[in-house]
Structures are given as structure tokens and as C-alpha cells.
Length: 96
Ligand SMILES: [Zn+2]
Image (cartoon, rainbow, N blue to C red; front, side, top):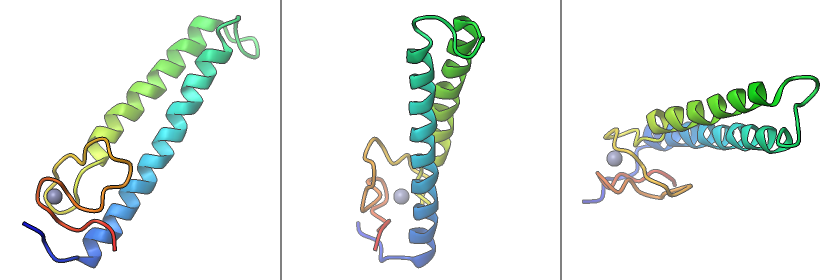
């Protein structure tokens, strides 16, 4: 079942996709922090502290992504694809 393109859905999908990209960047920064702390601390912060912050960032990003990465029309989870054209659950067009 393919729904016709709804400009509001496409607009909302764009916002969610850009939020998701921001999240990926934050997660990468978290992982980089943790990796660079592997040899000791960063800027006087102990390694355990850096790891805890990095782990918190990654968990937060994963949770946010799970809430954010949903179809604007049916609220179904959009899966692992970076930029799906259609919702695999309801078939709504997500990009023009
Ligand atoms: Zn949907």
C-alpha cells in the first residue's frame, strides 16, 4: 500500500533525519573521546570519567534515535536505513 506524498510528512521526515545525523556525530565524538582516553585521561580528567561520559553519550544517542527515528505518519520505527524513501510499515512516501 503506497500513500501519496504529504508535504507535512516529508518536512517532518527531513527534521528527523537531520536530528538523527546530529546524533550520529555525537555518538562518534563519544567513541573518539573514549578511544583517545585509552592511553590515560584527557585534559586532566581520569580515564574512568571520560569513559563514563562517552558511554552516557552513546546510550543517550541510541535511546533518542529509537524515539526520533519513526515514520511521521504511522509512528513505525524506520529501521537501520540512513535515508529510506518510503515507510516500510505504512508505505508513506518520506522524501520527494
Ligand atoms: Zn509509516
